[in-house]
Structure formats: C-alpha cells, structure tokens
Length: 128
Image 1 (cartoon, rainbow, N blue to C red):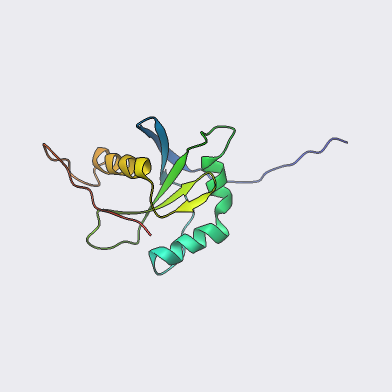
Image 2: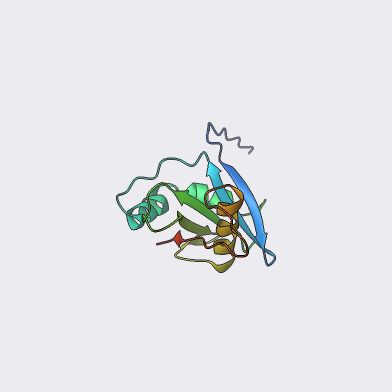
C-alpha cells in the first residue's frame, strides 16, 4: 500500500556552516522559532521539549555528518558575555562543545558581533 504525506510547513531556518579541525558546526542565523524562558536553562528545556524536531532537521542525516553540532544564538544573555548560545548535536543537547565553541567564536568576529583585534580577539560566550 502506498502512503503519501503532505508536510505543510513555513519554517525556513537560515544557517552558516563552519568546519573547525575537520568537525562541522552549523550556526543558526535566522528563522528559528521564538524560545520561551526566563533563563538560559529555561530556554534549553523549552527547546528540548517543544522544538526537538528542528534539532533533528539541522543535525541528522541524510544531509549531515555524524559529528554535526548546531548552535542557536539567544537574545537572552549575561551582560558580560558577547554572545549566548545553546548547543545541539545529533543525539540531543549539550552544555559545551570544543569545535562548535571555536566556530561560534569565529562567526561572532566574521559577522560583526565582536570586533576583531590583532593579534588576538577575545570572545566571551555564555552557555548553559
């Protein structure tokens, strides 16, 4: 028996893909739904409970790598941080990831979130 499914979806998520040390990282630039919560932990739990289908879309096969991490920049943040993020990977969520941290740092400089200075730029990243 043939089955057909129609997906009515207007979700368009724009991303930037980066590689650090050969490991992929996908930075969400726009289109991610609003994340509800008063703290970074509340937002993490909201994403995990209500938006996990988007994590799977961004990190899992057929178009992704087994080590794929995605990073969601958040509007909420510590005033001492340059950028606040949530990390996602193929199996769930995490509080940190070395290669994704390097990727979001590079992204912050390349996209003007943090001004690059020579010889070294410090990027302060808040994570759960």
